[in-house]
Length: 260
Image (cartoon, rainbow, N blue to C red; front, top):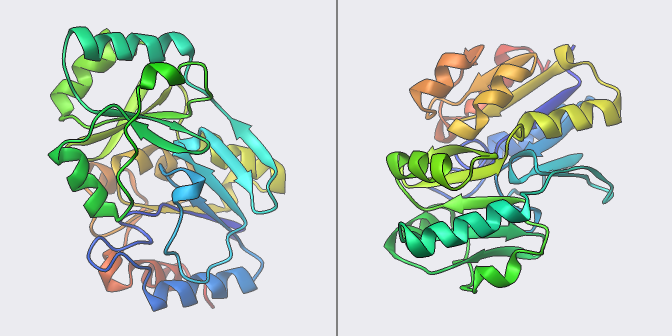
């Protein structure tokens, strides 16, 4: 019996075409909640960037890829930060080796060293405002949950190898990568919520579409990839449903008889 379901946002709940959650998805999730199933978001976004999700009442939020997990009531149940030395290393690397845009994600928002066309493209895609430009060196003593690199995969690998050795990266877009302290991904938040609600991992399900969902789909009892997911995501899933624009969540919940 499924007792908790975890949902990615972009490309899973939110369509990249409509930038909204379909009514079929809203209705299906609300029906699941009525059955007593815990419904929890699992996203790379900050909590303040969670928006346009209809009238779904979530039971908790796994944000910045597992770096910060909080209940609807505001109780923080898990937090992981990027060390100061890694922040200094990245700033120095960007100044002296390769110039590229990157953000520091802190509680009050996401801040960037400079904006270019790649940054604007990602912002347009997910319909969030451009991050404010700031001298990121002034932020190295703050609690930084995640770094975002606006680079291609090869550049990302070089940066991770040479400047962010105690961190790891994941990506859901060809020109954008999430960076967290090693050992941090959405499964950290999942385990925190399972302890909090005293639910066994075998009683869980998750939906995702991006590279930062792979560990989550492998971790839960039933991992479901959206039809619009990449091949690497589909390869680890227990089931591949229809796309986000084709009622994929509702169809999968029906397939596994969660809505009966």
